[in-house]
Image 1: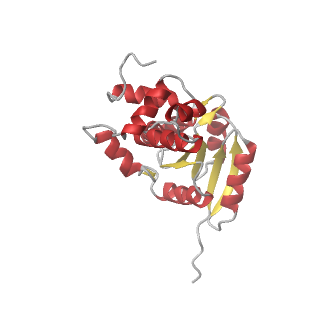
Image 2: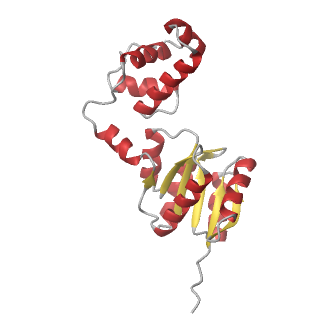
Image 3: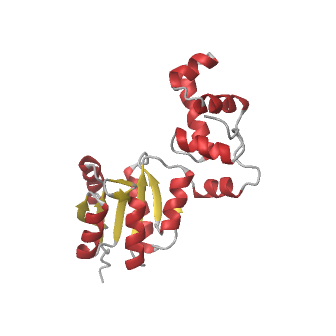
Length: 216
């Protein structure tokens, strides 16, 4: 007897049409998924999820009428068995744990290959209440570490300059390094602090005691 593969339906929610098109092509290349519909806002996502009843919803965090996490919470409260994948351009610890706490099934950076998004959707369809993220173990260690994040002496210097409001070019001049090197230090700081941007990095660093509370 022939074993027919189940085809899963997916709803794509992103306010950028090009992103939705790219995701749609990735899912249409796989035999086990079909794109049921596309939405560009929280309201449309909620509405289409009710109409189409997809197996999986893939949503961006940034939407024009709220956040993808708002959508996750609304869908999860109504549909406990729905698979939900959160995509974000800023994959810091705060976003990761925000997705986990909202009830998402998986968390994927937009920098990841499209195959990773499809794999996350497969996981979400099978285990909608079991959270998966590439950096989950490291993020948990950072959250649970009693000593907090550890920066190198150079990274600490760069952090202070960030708090002073300096940009990449100014930091590079101040430290007599290339702009590429300065960018690498900043990326490492964001990674270690689990931050997505300068404001988050400074806030987390202050809470962790890496910056004085009177820092700018």
